[in-house]
Length: 160
Ligand code: FES
Ligand code: FES
Image 1: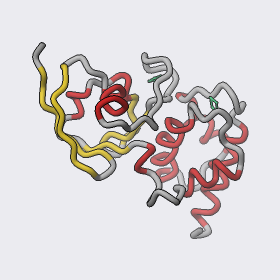
Image 2: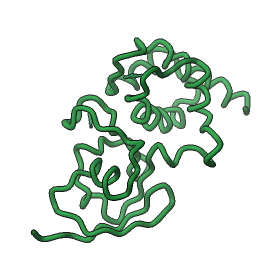
Image 3: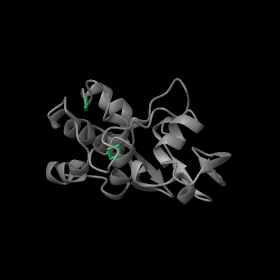
Image 4: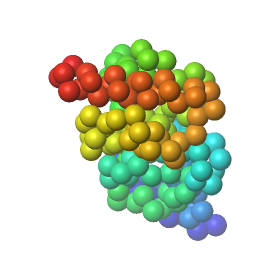
């Protein structure tokens, strides 16, 4: 079976691998790079669990092939925090406001919300719910996620 070279940057680090043309980007991240923080739920673009940033834009990694990420820059949930003993401010807000229960959806939700907060520094509840509309969570009922986003936004505005 023919293989193709994929060379890309993930969380600031360069990687190069030979992969089959059909390999999904989500499987590439999890199985080739061991970045298992990106979760896979539905595998057909519905649940949002596999969301990562591709050149800064949220994408569903189960709907892309690894070869399509050649030459591009990715960020996964592993790249959010500044260090191994730290949480990103949004992760911290999720922890404090109980924005997660089982956590299966959380990586995808964080990767959706980080660029959202960049573009909407003071989002209202409706905007937050709209931003979350492509991410399924079976545990929280979403209210605590909305609370966590508000908390993160307030702290960000206060410079904390
Ligand atoms: S696993 Fe990709 S959207 Fe559900
Ligand atoms: S916290 Fe369990 S699916 Fe969202």
